[in-house]
Length: 198
Image (cartoon, rainbow, N blue to C red; front, top):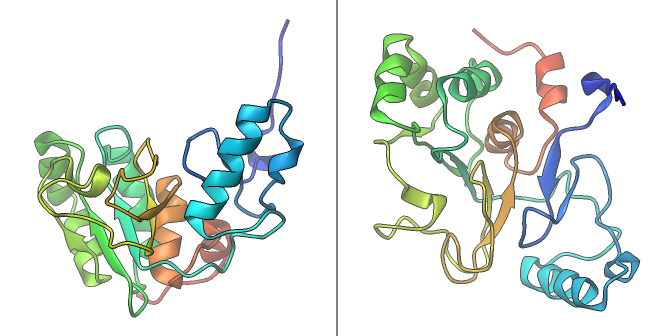
């Protein structure tokens, strides 16, 4: 069989809970744990909402964030950095947000710097970091403090992944970049409709 999907009609995705399975449309509503068929899944969803400080039916758009991490070996390729740079060019990281870009490898770092992407990010208020695991899994004391919220392009968000009590939302690079600029979970499609300065 052949299935065709109009990708333009698919909303960007973000996690609301503590597993990549806890994913929803960025402009959607957090599902009710009771909607899960399996009792173990219902319990896991309920615990995830408690950890994340969120409620079923709540929308994530506009939820404040304190950290944005664009990195990880899986989602910090040169194509990812180009996408994020398109969002942040001519804009600036919101006050109170700590935003990092960690290239996925030394080869990616060199190519990005040759293209001037590092300067785009630093001009926008991001920290341009050396390649490595970094905040992806909270090494070298590069942690999200307890109770604070991070939008990350990592591929895991279980409890404790970015530090004890950290609240991690996994998202694509465009959504992460948009969150850094807006200071809250934001739809990157809105930023691409608005002209940036410069």
